[in-house]
Length: 127
Image (tube, rainbow, N blue to C red; front, side, top):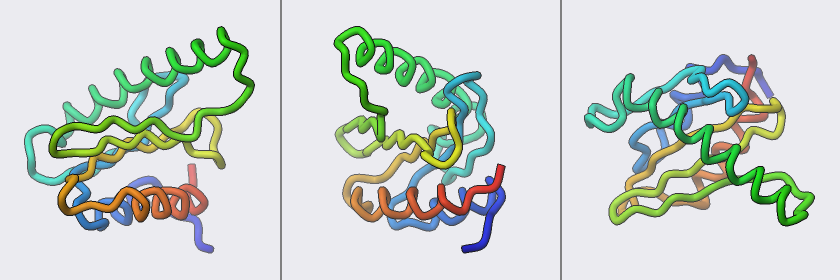
């Protein structure tokens, strides 16, 4: 497999049917390392950066909950289900601290394929 830079990986994920926007974030710092989105207002530059920053807090909060209740497993993903969209937060196993944030149209997208694609792309991600 060939290693890919962040923006090449994002292009690959955004090519999924129903993909609305995708970003790579660092949950340790809250920074957005890159994003690609469709022309909808919700997935333009500033909004995806806000989504990464706030999702960082969600990941940290869930990690604190797991620790508090004694669960000794890592988070694989967090799924947020909206009326018309899925928002999939998938932690990148190959690079500690990073995660994908993918928004998918519920009618056009396929969650199983999105998960497979994110796993494939994360193996190729070059940071």
